[in-house]
Each structure stands twice: as structure tokens, then as C-alpha cells.
Image 1 (cartoon, rainbow, N blue to C red):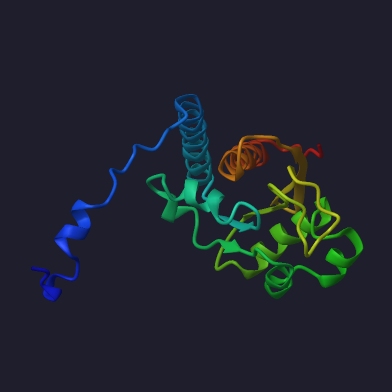
Image 2 (cartoon, helix red, strand yellow):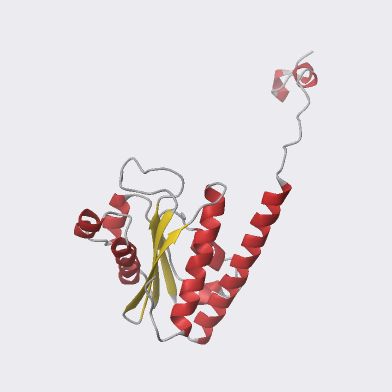
Length: 203
């Protein structure tokens, strides 16, 4: 007899169909693992360089949803180089952080100018940071709030010592997670280049 104290009727459990194993694409899983390992290695280099130079970093992320900060904080010693980060997924959040509304109006939210403004706003709002990163773009669909968006086109900016490196990334991959992995890898590489080189590039 069913005892309501346990909440589930045992007969009901017996009658449920067998749960089939999830079919996993092993090749894709391997690729994800390789991208993850690559990003962790880059994050380790970034944390080491920041530590050696006694620098702090802050991130202002939109489409990556905090993924860059996630990788950095997976590295021992991250607390010595990162005190805060910001996820500004909407236009309103970017403006509230300090991105000028005029920049978004003139250049759109998906632009080099907005990415740079995000990096600069992060530096101003951070408790303490020397390097600011801004990431904006549309990953898998046209943003209904920003119809000018092109899926897979990402804008990245790294500001350090008054100079800004900007990149426009055209990324095609299988799904949002894969795209984010590639963006984060590019961002980590750009940070590394910016703090180890005196030249700031625009690509």
C-alpha cells in the first residue's frame, strides 16, 4: 500500500520506462575538452603575468556571461589579480555600469567602440584594476533588441595603460558553448599580448 509519508508510490516507480542513455557525440566532447584545456593554460599564463607585474584585471562581459572571469578564477592565485568582474547582458546594464548611451546609439551595442567603452567603464567601476576587458556580440541569433546584430560576430577590447587593443571575431561553431569557448580563448590571448607587449594592435 502507498504510504503518503514517502511521497512517491513505489508501484509508480516500477511502471516507469527505462531511462535511455544520452547519446554523446564523442568527437565534440573531445573538442570541448581540448578547448577547455587550452583556455585553462592561457588563463594560467595570464594570472602568472599579472602576478609578476603586480597588475589587476577586471572583465565586463555580455555574450560570454562571465565566462572569462570563470576561467581566470579557476587558477590558483586568481584572487591576487582579480577583485571584481561585471556581466552586463543588456544595453541597460551596460549603460548603468558607465557605457555612454551615446556610444551605443551612434555605433550600436555590437561595435569596437562599445567594447572599448565597456573595458573603460570596468576600469572606472572596479575596486582596483589596471587591465580592463570588454566583450560584446551576438552568438547564435539576431538579437531582437539590437536588430543590426550578426550572429557569430564578436567585438573584443582590452585596455591597459591608456591604450586599447580591439578585435572583431567571426566565429562559427556548433552551439553557444563552443562559440563562448573560442571567444574566451581569444580574449585571454589578447590580454596576454597586451600586458607583455608595448604595441597595441587593431584587428
